[in-house]
Image 1 (cartoon, rainbow, N blue to C red):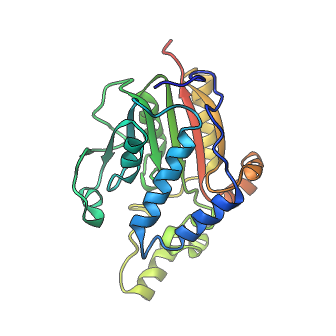
Image 2: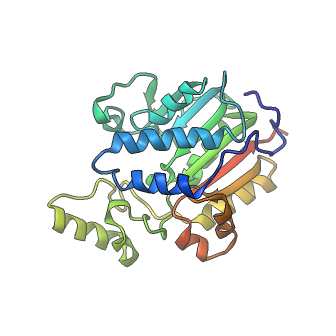
Length: 259
């Protein structure tokens, strides 16, 4: 991974996090169910733009954990990375008519990669879908090389979209929201609470990041609400409010050299 600021914790460039960008993402988000490929390709390109603030993806070895059909890995390849992805669910790999390509089937909490194998390890909106989110975070750090970037985003439970397609009824309980969805749609939700969707809170991930930083494993570069303009980043610093208003948290870390 090449970057003029590698290891310093300073962004390599400033990708504008503007209100116009937020509006564009939210408009696309409304079409997630009817046109998922459009939404996820747009989100993948936006994620690459965000990661490129911290390092150059050109000629880097990059890994996307929980890559679904591979949109983010493809976007990283378009940015010049040699990228692969790992996905636990075979049906997700083949979603939208795509083929396996340069992805592999595997568990993001127990990845079949050597320590320090990648310049960039990332995961976009997957952490809330695993029953072991902190273990997956540990794995993302493990496979990143010293000085490498770890970039993670997830939808926190108490955000407006915490229940995914069952929102906002998840505020009354995940199981209750899932039952309501099934009654109204004659099918269970894809993101089934307790099976493929779990409660995950901003405070949990921040506590994990602080512990990792104190242990000397990572440097926390930046934590921010992923979809919002830059001026809204103060939300993450306010307990309780951040759980309700963040919508989707992004955290950028740099792995420190092994002691």
